[in-house]
Image 1 (cartoon, rainbow, N blue to C red):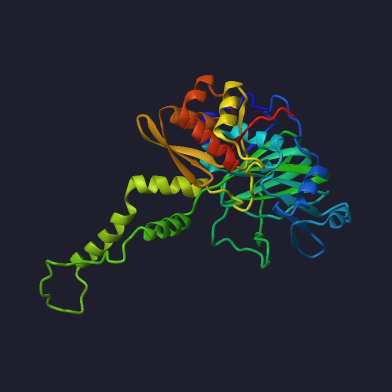
Image 2 (image 1 turned 90 degrees about the vertical axis):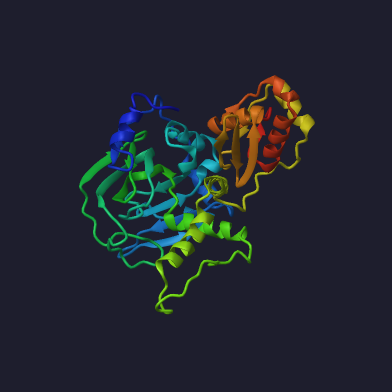
Length: 383
């Protein structure tokens, strides 16, 4: 599926992280990629993150998954919503929904959350800290957009949900299948199902916070600092008041810190590793039978498509005219020449067919073998 008559440059210039946008069915042919009962089945799986939000009279209730089949079967005909995270990692047709949004860099993509709601079901008025495209897949949903919010915006007292204490909508639309609502970070919004079997696909994007970047990077930097790397002042001179910390000392102390944090090459390698670390680190996508170099050579020669695992995070950072660092699920691979070209290709496309000549390139074969055995990529099966 792809978009028709969608002006990417206009969207990025006028709307991205600036103001919401309603996009009426831009797909060349919209088809809902997942049935309600399939989503319910995923919600019952132990390894899948899910939530059930109900709205009984007078309040909101949330139940963390995995969900029970009997519990889902016994839900009423209104006022509940089932939310399932990272469905793109388990359903290829849902992962395909990300493709039209690839004008946003891959490293910013988080996952596709899918919601299934009964009539009047929703999660309440709230705001998020990330960009999201809300795709109406099945049924209808009324969306209301409100003003910008921030950390000082009053919230209801609730143990599990961050709901706005007051919500005054400024715009309102009913979305039909195939319609999309883009909501930038911080904008209040509220979606309520109009009728049963209301399915919404939320293509979410992530942005690291300053606190996360500093906290994790400093931890990494500390691991490489020797215990005897101490403050020195061999040019010390007597000062008028021994109780004062002089500007020169403060400058040297700050410089000690900044020298450790200001190496662009070290930061690039760290961030690529940090950003590509899997969202669900406990998931094991490794093949039951590891591949060896001969298996990989045979598949390359046979022009078998190499598929990227939707659950795998793969990005690269160029660090020279013919060199780059490939990051795959938190592991860094230094690449040059043919391996660098392969890395760029596999990061850009969900499926690639390698040139048969690369079967005779040991470095490429070795890299592909490692990625296959990590579960990042796999040659298309004949089944």
